[in-house]
Length: 240
Image 1 (cartoon, one colour):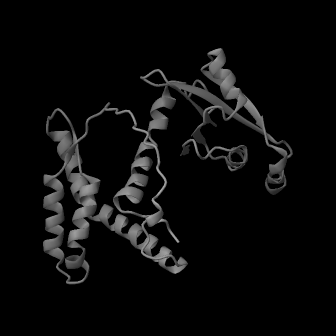
Image 2 (tube, helix red, strand yellow):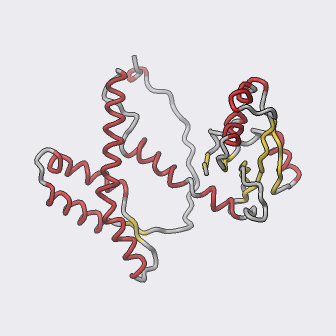
Image 3 (cartoon, one colour):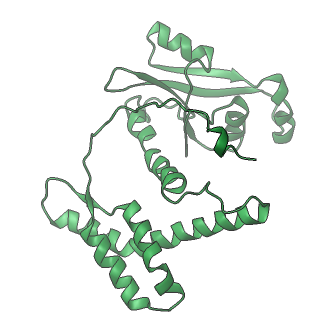
């Protein structure tokens, strides 16, 4: 099934997923639908609703050979520890098989994808292109995706070893490899591994450093986000 964050939902997308029989669970923005607002105002927690495809998207009915523009889905309210409420829209309408309490854990599974975006955008600098031509951007994008893929492949043996140690060793916290550190190590041994063909020493260095720099998994930690005001760039550094 698809787990989608607040920027993805639209009636046309939900209609397409329904016709393709793809299950989904997507979070709704505050005030995105009147039905979601009404649920929060009335204190409802779980509701089966039917939306209608807007006129501008009625061409999808012809594409999928469907007579009805209706979209049947389920709205579920998730209550967070700090008292806030989130509304998710899902195609899992069977309340007995999928109770309301399971959607909080289900929606949290998207966090690995969020961490993947952070690695791409912040750690590896995916948007920091070395040129402005379409060819240059494609090369930079493909090179960084290749680097991330190779980093995951080179880190996999140690990742499996650490998981096996977590099952045997009795510690307060389980451990995991540090992805940011893994990227830095792979960059360091990149030349020796691919240009000078120093394969054995490079792989041993990656394994040893990754295993020594594992970090603890502290479940349940939460830190409030610090929303910083974005300042416009100075005129001296304005792009041409």
